[in-house]
Length: 117
Image (cartoon, rainbow, N blue to C red; front, side, top):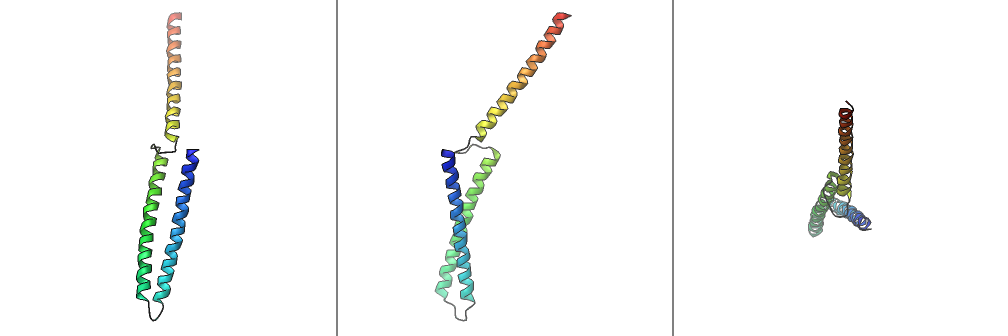
């Protein structure tokens, strides 16, 4: 259940980033529209430019956080809400057990052959 909550939070964060990118584009459009006028409103340009810069920095930080999280998940590093690392450890342990069984079987066959000789 916690995994679904974490996944939903990640999706909501991405949706927030998407909305903020929309706001960035609106700010850029407003600045371009204002710059196309003969008499520009400097205060509006300053406000929109500041909002644009702040939004770009926020989006960059949020996307970096998302990328760091995805890098953790992809490399199998432990992170909250994932059982990938535990499953991988379990699979590797089972493979080692199978290998040990095979080797013990080989030793048993060798011993039987030596006893028969």
